[in-house]
Length: 199
Image 1 (tube, helix red, strand yellow):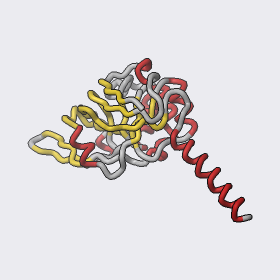
Image 2 (image 1 turned 90 degrees about the horizontal axis):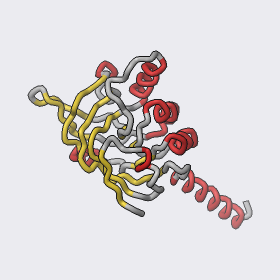
Image 3 (image 1 turned 90 degrees about the vertical axis):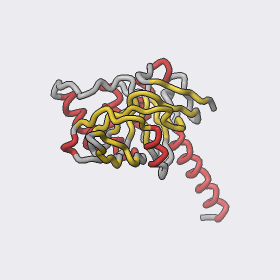
Image 4 (image 1 turned 180 degrees about the vertical axis):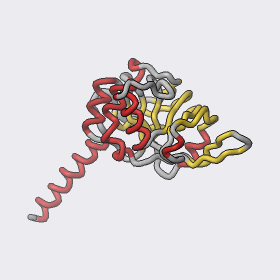
């Protein structure tokens, strides 16, 4: 296990150095995007429209933050991760089209996303669920909010972060997926127990 500190934009070369169980911290620009923002971004791409921000080399956080306005300035109060499987439907195309390098969330992602990460050079950084206030502390500034018509949790928040993490690399750019490995071990263990029980 190694610890890496990255500043956005992150290169494909840097991301390919990572292996599962490495720990990363991200400084620079990060966006939040849940289902609705993923869907809209891909629709924009299909229609040939530019996104409000160039995502290449950035981190995308599966998060519906709680944000309040103070004196015309947005402040992130809490920013806990959303379960990433909700975005599995879109993430492979998102990685392919926009070249994001780090996807952050909880609960992991499936084979399609793992394959896209291997092909295009991206990793999945698992963030601890329930640590929404810790995440908010690493967010130094809300640079902008895009697509606010989708609602506060679904909008795309453009954030400036400092040492955002720790993020455990749970899917690397070499096709390794910790979540799938654990699932396999659980399945093998279950079969052994059934055999012992004669079931």
